[in-house]
Image (cartoon, rainbow, N blue to C red; front, side, top):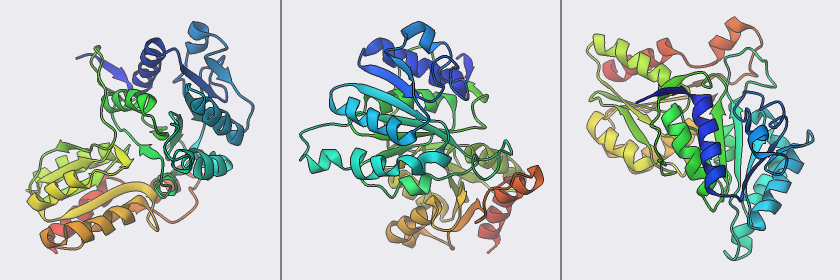
Length: 325
C-alpha cells in the first residue's frame, strides 16, 4: 500500500467527493488561491474554480451560516474554520441552528454540512491558536464530531462526513498534516461512530484519539519491555462515541487510562469515565485514570507547552500505577 501524508489524504478525499457529487463545494478563509492555512485545499481552486472553492470574508459566523443555508437548499458544503480556537465565533449558528434545525422541522429537512477545523498544540502558537476544544462540541446534540489520527482514517472518515445527511464537525490536529501512513488508491469509506483497536493487549486499555494515538503507541512499546501489555482503542469519532468497543476491551484488561490533549476539567475523558462507570464498573480492577492537558491557557514557551500536554512518560506512569495499584 502506498504511503501518503495526512494532508494528501484529506486533499484526495475532497477531490474524490467533488468529482462524485457536483453538489459538494468548499468555503472558508484563504482556502482558494492560497490553498488553505495548512495546504489541505491546495490547487482545488485551479481545478474547480470560484463557484466550488470559495474564499470567504474573515467571519466564522458567516461561513457556518452560508454553509447551513446551502445545505438546506440541497448542496453539500464543506466549510473550513481555520482554527478551532475561533469556533466560539460561530457557536450560535452551530449550536442553535445547524444542530437543531432538522429536529425543529420534524425531520422534513436534512443538513449535510461538514465543518473542517484544526486544533491542538505543538507549534508554540500560543493561547489563541493551540487549544483542544472538542469537549465543547460533544455537548451539542444534533451534530457529529470526528477526530481521526491516521491518513487512512482521515480520508475514509472525511468522505463519510461529506456524504452524511447530518452536520459533522471534522477536527484535524495541526501536528498531523505531515504524518505519513498507508492509504489505498481505491474507493473506501469508514463509518462514523466506529472506534478501532489499534493495538491488542491484555493488561491495560489506553483509550485515546487524534494525535495522542501516536504517544500511546510509543508508550505501549516501552511498557511491553516492562512486561505490561497495553491495548489501544482509537475512538476516531467522539460523537457518537463507540463505547461498545471500549467496554469489550475493558472486559479483557480490567484497567482504563484515558489519554486526551484537551483540558482535564470537563474534558472528553470525563464523559468517557462516566460512561465506563455506568456501563463497565463490574469489569474494573481499579480506578479510571485520566492523562489530559493541564487546566491552563496554552503557553507560548516551547518548554511550557510540552509540560501542558500529555506525553509518553505520563502515559507510562499512568499504566504502571494501574498495574501496581
